[in-house]
Image 1 (cartoon, rainbow, N blue to C red):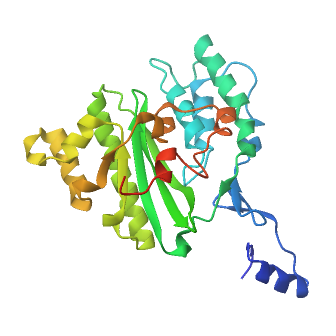
Image 2 (cartoon, rainbow, N blue to C red):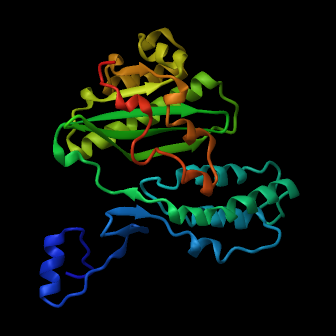
Length: 287
C-alpha cells in the first residue's frame, strides 16, 4: 500500500520512528487536506493561472466552471455565480460574452483566489454518538438548494458543522417560487436520505427547516389534494419523512439563503456557515 496520510498523532509517531515521511498537506478527491489542522481547503491557482486576460467566450467560461471538482460542494457558493453566467441567451460557444457580462465574469474570476483562505473542518463530531441532523433549504429566481448540518451538544457546548450541500440552477422555463421551494425541499430530502443511508442515522430524528410557508403547507397536507407536479414531489418527500419533522424558521436564520444567490470568492470568508451555522441551530430541538 502507498500514498498514506493521516491526522492520527500515534500513526505519525510510529512512521517517524520507522523513518517514513509524513505529509502535512495532501489531496483527497481533488481537495487539499491539512493533516495537522484536519481541515479541507481549496487551491484555485491551477484554474485561474491559465485563464485569458482579454475578452472571454462562452466556451472558455464553461471550461473554467467544469474544472472545479468538489464532490461535497465546498465551492458551491461561488460556482453558482459562474453557472449563472453560462446561461447567456443567444450566445454561441465561440462568441464573445457581452461587455457587461464579461466584466462581471472577470470580477468573479479575480475573487477566486480568496477561496484559498477558507478552511473547512473535516471532522463532523458524529463519532460522539449523540448528535442531531438539521436540513435547511431555500430558493430564488436563479437557483435553489439545501444544506445539511450536524449538531452536537456536550457539556453545555454546541458544535455545529456543515456536512455537505447541493444546489441547482432554476429551470430555464419559468417556474413559480412555491414550486421552486418544493424542488429545494426535495433536494434536501434526498440529501438527508443519502446521509442516513451512509451513516446509519435514523431519518425520523432529523429536523428540516425553511421559511417557505406555502411549501410547508403542501408537505403537511395529503398530496392527493394537489396537481401532478406538487403531488408527485410531496409524495416522494412523505415517503421518507414524517410531515411533523418539517418546521418553519425566519429567513434571517436560514443558512441555505446563500445557496440560492451565490457569492464571490472573497465574500465566503466572512460567513459562519462552516463552523457554527445559524443562530437557530443553537436552540434546543423542541423549540
